[in-house]
Amino acid sequence: MAEFADPHLITFPKLGEPGIGYISVTEQQQQQLVPFGVQRIFWTYYTPESIVRGRHAHHRTEQVLIAVAGRITVTTELADGTIEVFRLEDPYVGLYVPPRAWHTMQYSHSAVQLVLASGPYEEADYIRDYDEFRRIWAAQDSAAS
Image 1 (cartoon, rainbow, N blue to C red):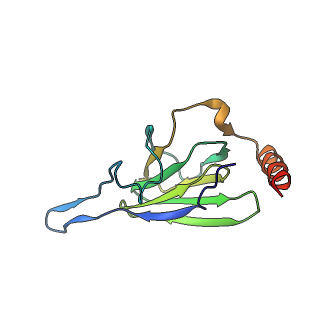
Image 2 (image 1 turned 30 degrees about the horizontal axis):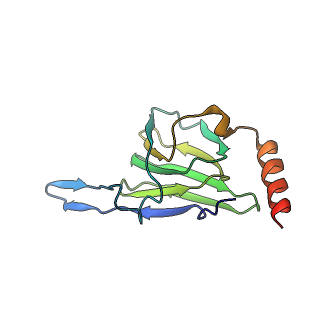
Image 3 (image 1 turned 180 degrees about the horizontal axis):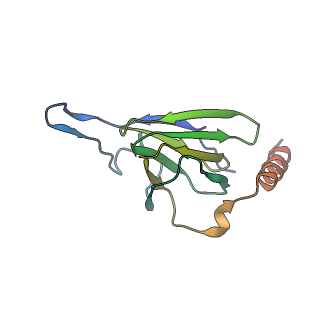
């Protein structure tokens, strides 16, 4: 089974100054920032503040979530029960979400989320039932022991 880093924040370069604005960039050669080749990019917006999105994990897909506008509160849970809460509100900071991490997102009204993903959309890669997530990874963790 492949080893992946735990969820963690990634700070991208913030180039510019207040008088002219800023740009942040990452390139495939900068593997130290995004630890995978990006094969899919998507964004979410106009999500009502009362809605919690995500509520899933992936078998294989790695992601970096970026709040390019507004604020996004991301909660991650690993198979061992480790829960972390991340507040994304700077457009030069992303959150790495590995496979096997259950995650939920809640957005401010003006939030726009950009997602860099390691693979194309594949429904079979999603685990959308929380109890199934716990059962799958608990079984694999005990088999690896």
